[in-house]
Length: 437
Image (cartoon, rainbow, N blue to C red; front, side, top):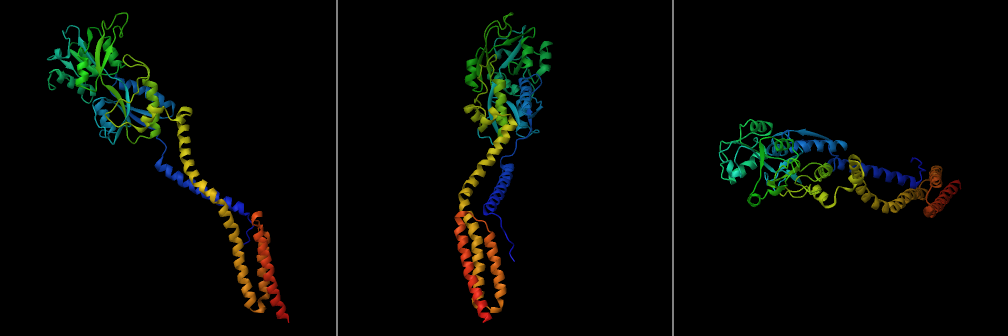
């Protein structure tokens, strides 16, 4: 015997819709887990040697990301070459790091993307005051510290030396950098020192104020920028280092590549956007060579540009990250990713709701019609001794029909069913009267 079901059809339909929606939501969440996962809370940045601009700026990136709940792990390195190896996964791993412009040329790279140029890295050439040197070519045969292996400074220093007729394997070009090179210059163990670094790097600031040492300008700076396109012609105005002491005593021309911020291609887009915001906060301020808001800039063409960086240069930070804290923006973004496909499913479902309701109401009525038709056939052709059973079955159908709640628009079908029940009852009663006779 079928169990009585007096549940309102609207309520049943609502339950079906809720169940279907929950199932769709669960499916979407599973897809989001794989197609749009949450960003990691930890990043690794390969920085550079202590005292350099890479390490200096990396500390500021760590502070800014920490405010947004992202931990930035800093890994010191010998410079650009080691940073490149880490980013490519050759020597350990790193998610983000600085690379010196001109070192890498992979416009079709599939493993790294650039976030753009962040600041100028001038080529600083410091010589002892007692050395008569006016141009780079005059350093031929002199003991020159050109930076440690693994740094972009050494590569650039060797290229500049070669342009000036100094063999790259000249034994007077010494692989010394950092504090060791400064100490050697102070003790007259070397005659000159070459470093490629941002103006605010502690190493550069120390050398600029070192007694007995002067900064050598690039009088042929325009020629360098023609021969080496990765370089920019810069001017260090008179008195910039020290107005009171009038240092430098005249305008000096320098040449500089840019420091470019590079990330792995698979870094989460939300973290790329966060890095771009940090880069804007750090590098947009004016410096000795940089104008206000000159950096960050889409000037690195050695690697493909990150799509998120491109959007940042065109329209600024993502809308949600402008008005919400980072993790709140991430969660809202994921919620939108969930709601959009969910709405795409719900809209056609809601359009089908009336048809589903009609089907649900009529399916039960039609099922009773099936039972009624079967009972009528039995009453017409069955044995009269079954009249009692037929009446019981008919009473059960009638009770269920009376208890069934349907929308007013479908009440006529239920009344018609009751009329047909009455007709079958007449047939059964007729068979019962025949039996008595």
